[in-house]
Length: 189
Image 1 (cartoon, rainbow, N blue to C red):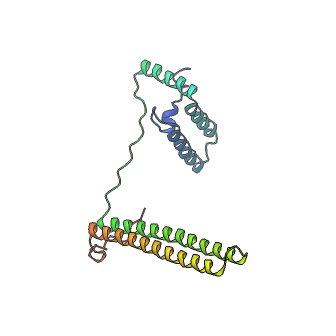
Image 2 (cartoon, rainbow, N blue to C red):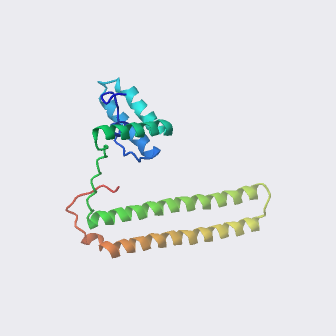
Image 3 (cartoon, rainbow, N blue to C red):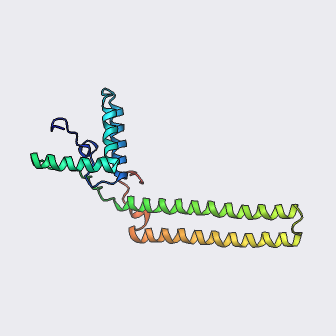
């Protein structure tokens, strides 16, 4: 293969030579999406698919690495390096507080949902046993009382965890009304 016919699959997909299969697949899908946005070159699809399969197959990849090292020896060309990602700017205290509170509220909501499903399931099971004659009225009432007390205990624990998270956020970032609101609503990702 001559130098003009050589395709550097690493450079085309934009991955480093030591990339794993997950990185290669992600880069292939990203590049495929870019090509789909510009449908003027349909001949690029088979070439891109070949580049992906060349890097995904260990035997073909080893052959490519050998060809790259021979090409570098002939031309002394540096290998393609991926463009480093820009660091995310630090968030303001108000944004950090909002994110922390949103996470705590979502966690609380999930925990309450799970607890309510568990409680309703226990009540339904007790009612089913009573209706089918497996237990008497006294045992039914005892089970319901136990389920209610367990349910209330778990609800109190969930609320205490949320209150602790809220206190930690307030300790770290101050009271919500002390935080500047001039930034506007930032993303909560």
